[in-house]
Image (cartoon, rainbow, N blue to C red; front, side, top):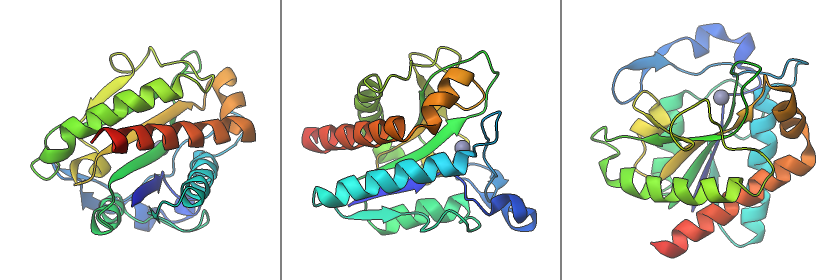
Length: 213
Ligand SMILES: [Zn+2]
């Protein structure tokens, strides 16, 4: 079983009373969800995360894998970040990916990997998630997107404030696939071809991780 969490949701912007509601993120409280970012010409992060997630799910199912997704459309609201973790945990996924793209300063480029630190709940998957993130970093290096130099160390960012990483009991990484506010990254992020390459990179990293266990 493979877990796929496409970041945000297309209807979030129209439902602030739902997505602003605080929920437990495993260490403190965070908003239920957020709207996500967009390219400067208005291509939303939700469309990107949904496109990659659906390509990845199709590829995985074609390879015979079972897939659980945290949302089943791109025009709904939520679910909240704690609920997303629960969906993946309850499905007993063997590995999971959170798909996002960043909204950083326009001069910055590249992908980064947000990885868990021990929260109590996730202790057993912190090291496996690190190994999986290393495999994903390598595979993302084949997509044409550069490794981010503006975030973290060698592309890795340890995060203790994200529900998806704090509440998971499944090896999990949050991929910031590129910077939507950078023109070169935005060109890639909007392209079908690049989206397919990202889905393929994630699938290869998952397969390599599962083989290595
Ligand atoms: Zn995001």
